[in-house]
Length: 188
Image (cartoon, rainbow, N blue to C red; front, side, top):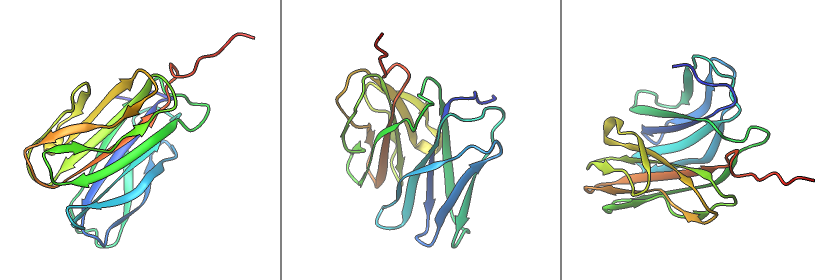
């Protein structure tokens, strides 16, 4: 379905081979995508992943494209999510974190939000073993046995995106975004 103008798009990119880099993420509507955290190697250095986002987007039928450099004869996947109710007057990103590991408890690592009612976005990719959605999160995708999840961080506090795994190597990433419900306008 068509995207809505003013919304937020979050993209998780994941690929193999150390020699590949993502230079740009663009779409056919001219929205500007920003990279979070740079890429993170995981499963030794066999895979890499990163998050990108665009806010206050121009809506419509959007096709997102990632431009790769290096040995592009590799595995590549992209997960795209869209959210409404995000501030559009400025950059809505508040916090972000990333962690890698190979235990059954999967976590992005915690960050403290700055506002009430922030969007807590999380994604986990596993090299082996099935991942499960974390408690209190809404599952948005289970494509390729990977998880995209989110929730409303109702109060200012420490948040992490958590998942469970049957084992194997994984990467977990989190980003928090300021919503229109986060800001309280006081009368003058």
